[in-house]
Length: 117
Image 1 (cartoon, helix red, strand yellow):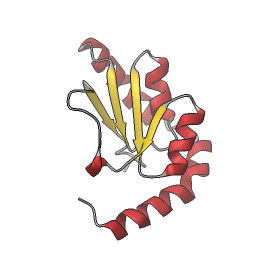
Image 2 (cartoon, helix red, strand yellow; image 1 turned 180 degrees about the vertical axis):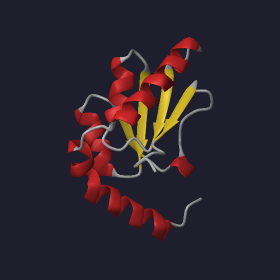
Image 3 (cartoon, rainbow, N blue to C red; image 1 turned 180 degrees about the horizontal axis):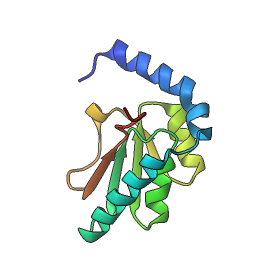
Image 4 (cartoon, helix red, strand yellow; image 1 turned 60 degrees about the vertical axis):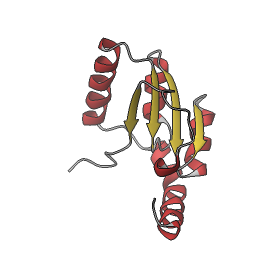
């Protein structure tokens, strides 16, 4: 588990960035990456996606509009609210304290690429 103080600092930072992240343009490389991931999911007949660290929900919305059942999670309640405003099922929770039943999802994505090196 992540230290409580570290989680609080991360939550505050993500909350503070929520508006900018929601309004920022999607980078070309990310559009390619998520399209590639979608193609792999569909080829493997995966339909229930858990996105951990969904941020403002841009990727979750992409996958939802492609026909997947998407559940988004984020540590930031402000990010979760932005997801919900887009019609995405979203919950405020940390990746180390997920509360879903086993085998609820057949695929998982994580917001690992805030910026590309």
